[in-house]
Image: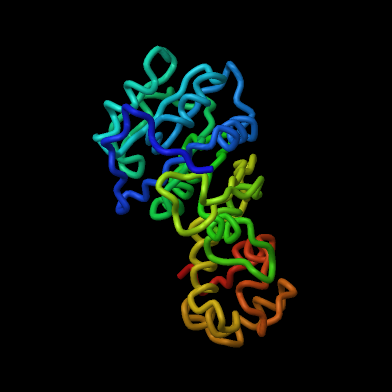
Length: 274
């Protein structure tokens, strides 16, 4: 059942523009901590601590928690909620712009755990997966539909799925009812676990993403049309390229697996490099 804010938080009004839907259900909070395998040696980065419920749960298990909050109105609430927890650092700032590295030494292992608003889900995942020092794992609470898109398999692949899966393995751990948030959102959520690939794929990332974006430029159209038009390659060249990788020119981008896209990136026709 959804809980209302505590007495010290009663005057706070969530902003819809910031995607503020705070998780209040203790069972789900604890589940995220367990899924992230938090232990006493871990450094944890949390984005959007909100009212501090997840932060508290993380701090009880982790060595240190660094939480980045964009909404300055929440800082006094967090200070009250997290009072007495000496292993928590709150940083006021935008996680998409903030250089948070001073809080973490270069090369230091860390985990990312967060209840993410929809509007920053994709850029946050991309920023941290592409970082010089990516988290060893991410446990995120997202909108159900977004989580399903990220974890899609051939037949239902999307640009988002291919982009995330290039860097990491992703899986849905559990679904979360919209009733355990305050205020209640319109859709249910899902807990997703993302583990960075080590080592990273050998394919050139710039080439990979250029091909994938071209392939998904019109998702319902066939690969031959999309790749030929967006990469400015003759249809015959594209047909031969696809055939070389045992991919039908009639297939749609959603049908391809990550390994298919990687194979295309590794065998890209030479004229595109000129």
